[in-house]
Length: 288
Image (tube, rainbow, N blue to C red; front, side, top):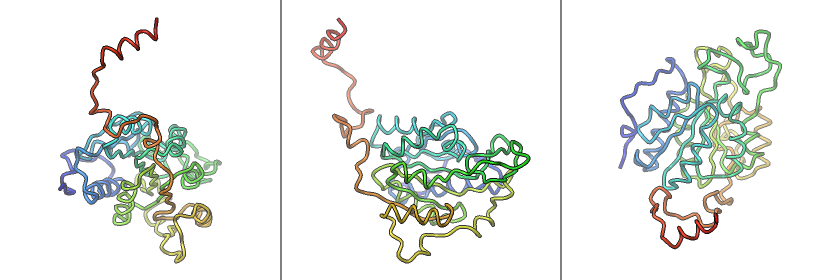
């Protein structure tokens, strides 16, 4: 059985010292090992941005896509080989700006993949501009007088789009992150995991200390029922999106793959590409 060490490679991350993405990477590796996966059974698909580098730092199949396109690629990988555990990863700019359309439709489609967003509320790779998650009044190089736009609420968007697994964590809490990612991988459907991952270089507002002061965990609500969509949405709004833990789970909705007519259980990647003469002639006849 694979261990955490088996999911490590010799590529040294070049994130800034103190970046929350280090912990996210470690949590993914721990979760994969804990679930009982082997490196060749996992595919990590990432987009652009600091977080996009993560696919190269984990010993598994990896694909570094283009900005905002991790989810279309991840869904294609899953359809080609449904036996793989597919993890898509990116930042808040990647998933909630240029990739927002893909995010919403991937959520409602409910394909059996896990999507991890490293939410630092700023564009870090391009040296500090506002992201869709930046708060009103947030001053950056692109908004020197402060942002006038309302920050996006990813948890509200996910639940309203029909997500069947919604969770949020904080990069300082590696035990919770690991447990959440484990549960997300085991969930048969689209798992949306937003992780507060502070940018220590360009975001001097939403710091580790700031998050610790504002985060509210679902465990603080004794009667919280994470199978209730209404209760989940209510608590998200009451805490202004600072809620952590497994916030909502719906195990009754079938995954996309299980609903596609004629989609075989055997991975497409392992099916024969040969075609019989009879089938070939039928295809040719359709074009006459």
